[in-house]
Amino acid sequence: MSNPFPGLQPPFSRERSLNFYSTTSSNSLPATLFPATVCDVDSFFLPHHDPKRFLELELSTPKLDKLFRHLWLAGLARPSRPLHRQKLIGRTILVTENPHEHLIWFETYIFIKPLPEFLLNFDFWQDHICSDIGLYKAARGLLLSYAWLVRHQSDLRIAKEAGLLHKNIEWSQWTLFLQDCLSHINPEILDDVSDRYQFGELRLTRLNMLYRLSGGSLDHFVRGYISYSTWYRAFFSRNFAWLLAIFATFSLLLSAMQVGLSTKTLTDSSWFHNVSYGFTVTSIVVAILSAFLISIVWLVLFCYYIRSTLLYHRRTMLKRERLREPMSSG
Image 1 (cartoon, rainbow, N blue to C red):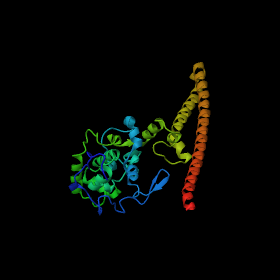
Image 2: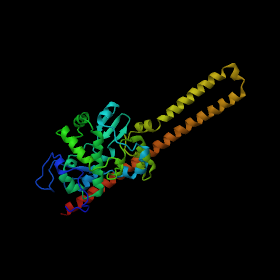
Image 3: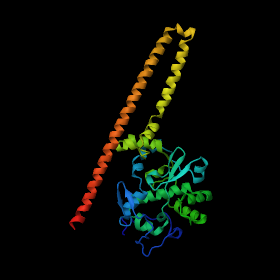
């Protein structure tokens, strides 16, 4: 494969390459290097038939790159904590194969993508990554993130136990490999990695907010950056829990006013009577409007999911019919 970017080279030397598979030629891929099949949105394809498409799904983070100017709201522009610190602050490591979810944290969980074995292979970089500047920067960024995550022997043990790194990597191999990588990737300037890796850990709740406010489709607004459970109860508990705090405050104030009206000092106070009356009416109005708002949101969500499910069903059936036509005609 000719390289349209001859200046791009793997971020490590051939001598430091960690090869856990072998090939008979530079362009042949072992059968177990890629998954047998991969899902891209709602369609399956075979990675060995379309390696470039697979690598884009495996490495690229276009959603985060588009949000780059606003990512400071979701995280700090500094390296991620190493794995042993993640454990120390009580976070559970959840393995994800989606690069968009790599180093995203939520409450006591952090999503981490395993480091693909092919990114440790010099020949693979030359044959499949150095020919695409976007893939090149994304792959360098993912490598850099593991320089952040695995800094100590304890981090390497955790990475192996969690299935993030190949089980046969030794500490001496890893340190020499990283030293070579960091001599090619400037960890201070970071101008040779994709925009997402200008930041380390990113908070999911703020990413959802940024993704919803960045425009786009109704689907983006409803589902956010990462779609949670589609149960209505889960949705309302996440987005309307603050109403419980408001109602609890209103209940406490109304109880206090009722007690105040029973005292001799406040019983004769016209000012306190007016305030109590106004607050009581306000509480009733807020309760009615809140119930109305929740009902409207539920109705909109119900209609949205029904419509999106119906459209998806029709689109899938139409696609299958089109695929059947040439087979039946043959």
